[in-house]
Length: 342
Image (cartoon, rainbow, N blue to C red; front, top):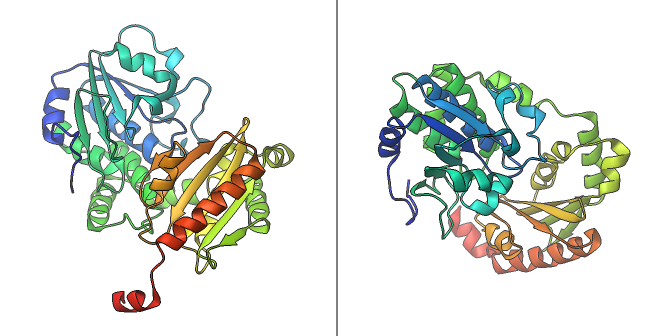
């Protein structure tokens, strides 16, 4: 694994510093996913086992974490920024690289006596005095799992369950390109420590609402293809959510339906919400889709990224489809080269 130039410590050194402190506030990014929530809660349990006072806070007051993850130990303790009163000891940003991505919790970040970042998103800046960022790590949960080994003598089932959830969601059930030997080694350790893979699979991947399935049906009907079938784009409108009584969480799995189509290299699912359009990008090959996401003001990883466009849905569909076609054409692998790789 390779850390970024902004990294100025090690996980072992971070643990040593944390063990000297008593009060912690853990925060992830806006619109938290499984890795974000799982990593936060895993670190919370580890620090509490070490005798520390720990609170977990969401990035925004007007947001709620996906109920999909309510089975995780500690989920019910997640706070909103406005729930936090008094001083802030150590603010730990988990699975989040910049102040902009912690929403209204930035005010709490500014009050902290010490700020720490534990992340796997490579950016050119930092928001903390102590930084550990490893973009080669498939999930932030992997880093928290290792950090926990320095904080407590034995990582228990609560730590393992939360970390395993973060790992399995950010690797797409160990199907994405970021899945490597380190993922399977850590997963085996987590299961040995008490993580329940069947429970995670059932609660996260086999627990879709009827509204979510109906949204997927609409998305499939609306699919657009570009780049000789290498790009798939679809969308759901705000009116679809109203008609189906669907939630934002119901739309999360939709991009995977596009990604799974034969011949598709790049998939994008667009979701209209609150006057803007949220895009989820996925790549099945080595195409770096984070470049396009960053050009829209978003970010993410090489094979999984997101962005928000503040423009009408129809305009966004046309723009994204055009830009993805250009990206696919620039990154196309010639048949001769493809044969040489096999």
